[in-house]
Image 1 (cartoon, helix red, strand yellow):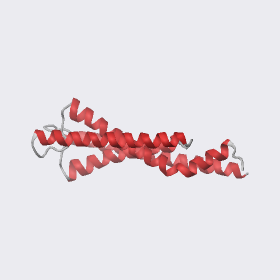
Image 2 (cartoon, rainbow, N blue to C red):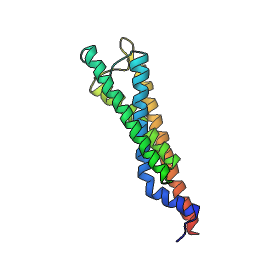
Image 3 (cartoon, rainbow, N blue to C red):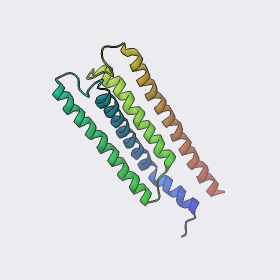
Image 4 (tube, rainbow, N blue to C red):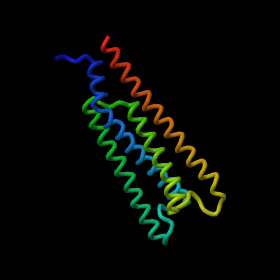
Length: 166
């Protein structure tokens, strides 16, 4: 049985849909955690990952947080390399996962770690409401765009599948 490029593309999208999505989510988590660590923790010194103890404990918590971001990013890129090797990389699905992962991380951080657990705040000694609003609104925007891309990618795959049956 020979495969046309279109049928191979459809087969790859079907087989690797979840892998594309989860690779993107993992990359989004790692990228958002990395950006948070570098910008807010290291460059601006606004907070540490865990601010409820000494500076030493805060630095160790930042190191563990930074390690998490790198493991997530490297793991994701390993999956991307595997998808490329199998000709199964689906950029639109991958980007939807990336935005869902980044937005999910940021919303989790803003609601759970900042407000519920109170292990750190974005910034101290200022009116925090504006920082919280911006942080969480950006997270929701990332999630909405990620959901839009996911639906668009899924619709594109269905259209491709339908066109191959005609």
